[in-house]
Image (tube, rainbow, N blue to C red; front, side, top):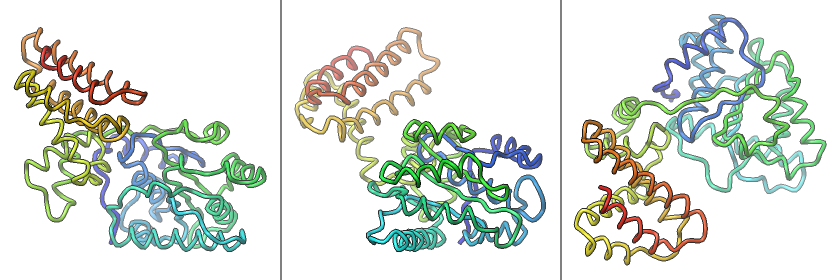
Length: 352
């Protein structure tokens, strides 16, 4: 199967097409943006343009190079994704194990181009760094250029490596061969070593409009979502197609609990007090934080719907959202979720 189209980044693609046409795209770039907004898909589109046989500019989509890139089968396009750390003891065998793991990941993404997020323990281990270094040093197979995409670069584990390996990676980023382009992506660029960030030209990838998320979900999912589920998932995604794609019942659970909390607040102190008492006193950074995130999403959506309300009512809704965000920040520390929820519910009853 081929990679799915890009949704919602037309203006950015237009700008990038001009940069590609002028042959001024940097040899070492970093695409930065929230999780799931399409950074890796956009990086692959850039790679497709760099490898396109029609010449500099946006990829034509018709030449054999473009078709190979869309099918993740181009010999000069190398996509590094987080993998499990190799188990072999010998460094050369570790590199081969990393190569096999990446090959299996690409085969899986060829079968299902709507890939899921990486597993929690997956990373770019030292073996992947060594493999990248080897690929950078070889001659392009079918054209004049090769492109290496390193997705989720914040999972790059150079701390475990020897100084020589780390320096080798930095050397590649600082002075890549003229026939090589490296594109890294990261949701949290601060997690990268400063010496790595300083060698990359950064480009921000924004969130997309809700209508683009809705269009993606309506077009790409099989079976399609029912209208109510479609709207709820679009709302919770907050401009991230990846987040919309990755949502499961586990993700939608916080939204349901947020709706129940707002219904309890509307019912008065007796209702919301019972709801607060039912809140476990642990997992402030887990389920409780997810509840507050879903509550903030619902309140923001309510702000858009009530834009024409009286000024006092609108100010109350804004203050309610601020209280939720304060509770969310506090939940990252040592707080009692049950007590925090009771105080928050009391505030919401007064403000909404």
